[in-house]
Image (cartoon, rainbow, N blue to C red; front, side):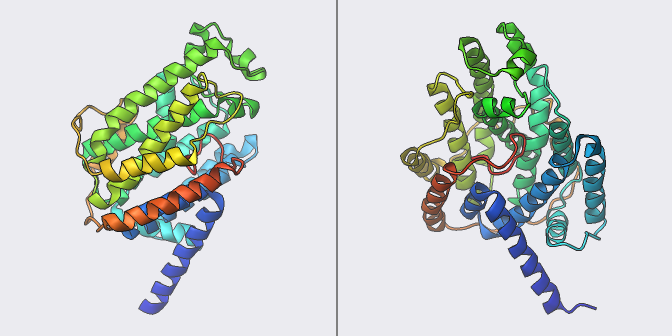
Length: 358
């Protein structure tokens, strides 16, 4: 029978393995995790490592094997939730997270469903359908991260899901051209037809014009609406977590503004936020991240309500302590430098993945 010291050594080794995987595959998240308290950052790395490996398993499957790949990931989850994870560092580490925060099974299940939608090349007719996609690939991650931070009231989870969906819409607006060239179309087809664009003809030959710019403008307006809704939730997080979440919020919203400054053109290049602007935004996050804002009780999106309900019916563990303001300030500078280096690297994560998007 393993000794307590052996268990501790294995747990430490598993954490290192998850950190190494994320440092290599999702550098932006690895850097951003350093703005979070250690009690949140370590389980967050385990969560993202599981997301990374699950996404790869589904995304890299042959078209005829997608359902089998999804079933395989769900069997991994079955074992994790039964307390008998597969004998690998990622699944063992994620199983500890599941037990520690009483993570509702519906949340990772939703994420895996979103991966399947991507792998199957699913399109979205309406903005409602696109929000449902965002709820799965990003809203679910926002909800899981919020649980890791020790906040789990329904209204706070709803605002976290708002933020996740807003970020996903921004990501779509930024990467329209790259997605189309990979055969993927995330824009609401209904909006495209209303602008006089044939979705399939455009996918075959993507180009930017004024009509497409209007579709992107509408998409970013919806993202801005959800960013505004999410404000109230940040102020309800533990103090040590607010600055990191606020920084991600501000940086992503700024990506959308950069797309707008380019004439809402996400086809002819990838919008990035410059280093000086990042420094300014992150300084603003340090100064404003602690504020509590109104609007917490707004109803959840219809598309994210199932995430909120899953959390509301689950047990609540004890909250974790946070870092000091000074520690967060030091890590902010480090984050800016890492993100600046990351902007120079080619994108290696599919547009639908919720990893490394900043």
